[in-house]
Image 1: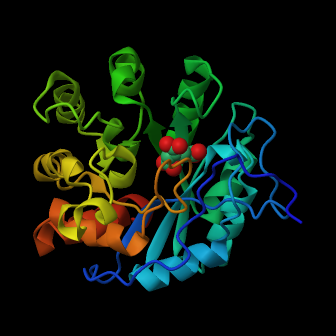
Image 2: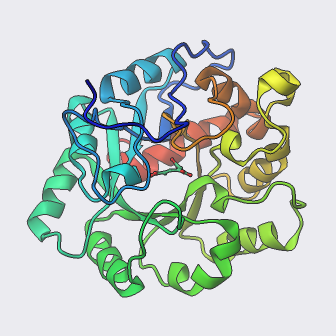
Length: 305
Ligand code: 0GY
């Protein structure tokens, strides 16, 4: 018996991802993935906006190996609120092969921050997607950012493109490296040169401390998955956006599977085919190495980079 009822219509992670045809470079990092529970061991937060399926560390590490990756960056999912125990447990069980991005509140003590650091946490996530979280005052977030900056951590921000103008002043005042989830969720039906994505590129151009994950074609695409269009054209509407970011900022991009893909509607991607998408957005071995190895190592394992 599971202790939690999944949100109706919830799509579980792909049970048998294909072996990618694209071989990721040695030492590659999946820099955006999550663990969910398992709920019986690590209960979901009372304030959560969805209840997922279980997706624990064993499954994550099995996926890492199947896809050919060496390491993971596990990002705290909103269904666990600011209770980072599942994340910490996964990082500790990884044998140094996983680092974490936590969610913390203002009430966290310096000692607790040190414990998170010792477990492998190197960043905090601020989430501005209204369907996922309740509002947190910006002064609280800025105070947290200032504290974690002294530990050498960065801030991961998740927001939707339409909200960037309103959030701009806050983001640009953050006193550390800032990593944007999923390119700031562009509307890919708009032109890549249109005002919305141009603003995002300007944000990165003007602020050299801003990085972006070129992740989640399956979440951003309107053209859809391989089953609809054939593998070569899967998520093709996302390609120009990701290529633009990688071309202009090759040293400030990261890639991740987003496994186990919270809140997807319509289809659950085959993670192997997501890996096969990488050469469409990072066409040369050099770009692939920066995206998958050099950049994430510099941010998460600087002592080895
Ligand atoms: C993602 C995207 C989503 C969810 C979360 O923490 C989360 O709940 O990040 C989403 O629903 O768009 O990056 O995993």
